[in-house]
Image (cartoon, rainbow, N blue to C red; front, side):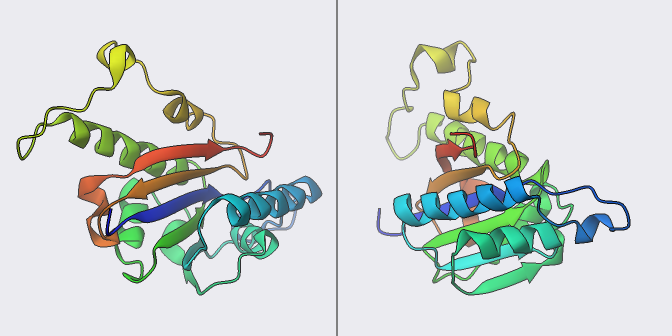
Length: 189
């Protein structure tokens, strides 16, 4: 795949609910801080170098990013705070075209819903015959309407979890093309 790209959609690590803080300013818990460090170690060890980061402006997402140890250009994006699927896909579509691996850090339910949407869009696209290609075979599970394990793992997307997806097109087309879900990682894994 000449234009292969990796997208990591991450939910911030566990945040505290202390009194006197606006939701936007909530800090990570000690447990959340440990999970963010572990997530960064996993990403740096198993995924290609992250070329760009799009991060919500909330304190807990910025702290999560800092603790991952991933040092690359970062854009803080207001639309990731409370953003839904369309907002998040729009943000990804505007990512730097030169970025081969993109990390997006945001919140639930938007981040896991976006991962699910992109993965199901890619699966549906691969089932449509095109250019003389037969439909992709997803086995008996797909015919029975059963979701693959990775998609099921998006349904309970704990704080600090992330999904790794791949696409063979530019970021600007990810909404139409979708992206293949390759892995879902939870802190307890």
